Image (tube, rainbow, N blue to C red; front, side):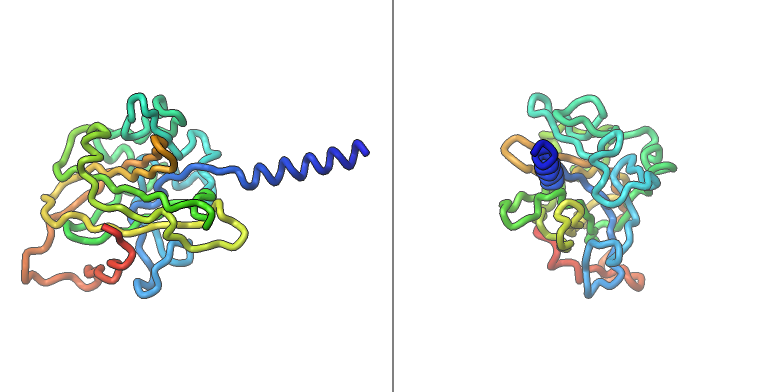
Length: 248
């Protein structure tokens, strides 16, 4: 009887562990589809060309597994101060150091992933792991892309970020993986403002799971000026086919 009870308890504990909710983060911030006519966020659907600050691309951890990595990738803001980008110290759930570096390149050289770069006025796509929050039983919680329209020497406050929302993306825009709601890949696209001058801009991915429960990821987007009207556009530079994925 004791053995049977122990087995049942172990199975129950394993079930709880497998269904426990986890918290998300921006994985790739410059995701490019292999076939724009068949957009998707699985590894077979595209390739990443830019990452959030100090993203451990050579960690060996599979997609969606960095919540158990040290330091953890997900960062939950503390409503007491709403530190906008994780500094590894603040937050109800501190993550890694995602603060602005000087020079910016310090966040994007080995062992970290490359910096995302694009042209003003262009659409750029990104992805994130579902972490069990894209199931039918949960309501839609949106992702806000916040980006001040001037180049800055330091991270702005959360108040400034929140006043500069350039896109609102559905969190549950995902490629379903049967039996694995944790590592399901999700993503969306947004348009970089066409009026931006050349420079590096601070961008924040901010997702609200519950009231006053926010998770963020930060990165620096290198932007070159938009082509002048009537100018020749290089082959492959047009990305209007992504429009249906964005909810600006």
